[in-house]
Image (tube, rainbow, N blue to C red; front, side, top):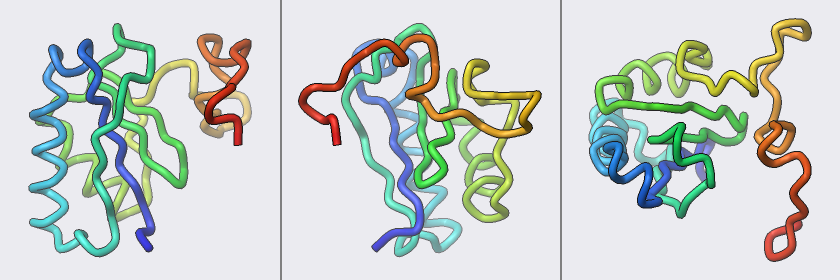
Length: 122
């Protein structure tokens, strides 16, 4: 079982924005840091927020990084995956709750809040 999963959007919008390079950079950096038995990198389908792509979500925290470039990957791996510190400059604005000092889940954003999951409701 992996301690973290890195989900990289593979939808057409994110792909046109460079998500394949981001995915490759994560795979390479994970191996370089010796994390391949602890961190799984997965290419996903579209998250629906194409204008924010390339999108990366890291679980179990659910940190939603937007407009990620391949050049950002080493910082995310070093800070988030190794040191446990979220890279705030890359977080999607709506997931940052300054007042509470916490990160909101993706389902709490305006885009997803009113949607009802049918196929993956669990």
